[in-house]
Image (cartoon, rainbow, N blue to C red):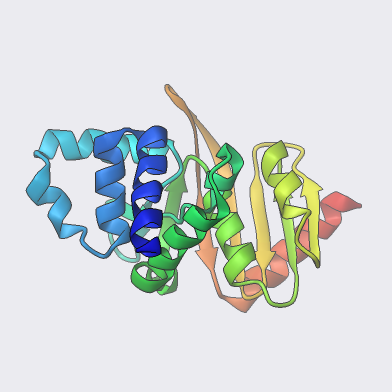
Length: 207
């Protein structure tokens, strides 16, 4: 019974953030039922919903290796804590993400584009960091929350660059201004050579 109550509360919280249909679409994908989104919404409606979820930081766009097109990549909902959402609701949604979606972090992509990195960074800190992390970020609320974790070093980014290393994961994004806001293009990797490059780069900025 309690799980059902939390599930309904989670769906309501998503609705308040991205609207009823956006919440339905995201929750279906989060539950491993992405194919149902096409069944429940028209192509044009699905396109608008995906675009809005991208802007709200719940989706990214990825370019698979060897391909010349982008597809959508579901991002975790961990940044909902920045909007006053109850921890139990966030933990419930993160549990669905770990169960149904975390494998996408293991997929090789040549490029990733996102609008908001906060959910990704907070999720990796909460669920993947065992030893340490270094972050080069500019967003004040993300810096504030990240500093609550032990063994996390946060450096203020002097420009639009966002990068970091969280145990075996590294990420590096550069700002690309657009007509309706700034997107960030880069990568997420477990390759050791990128960990070493980003580690050195952050230390150099820190001085």
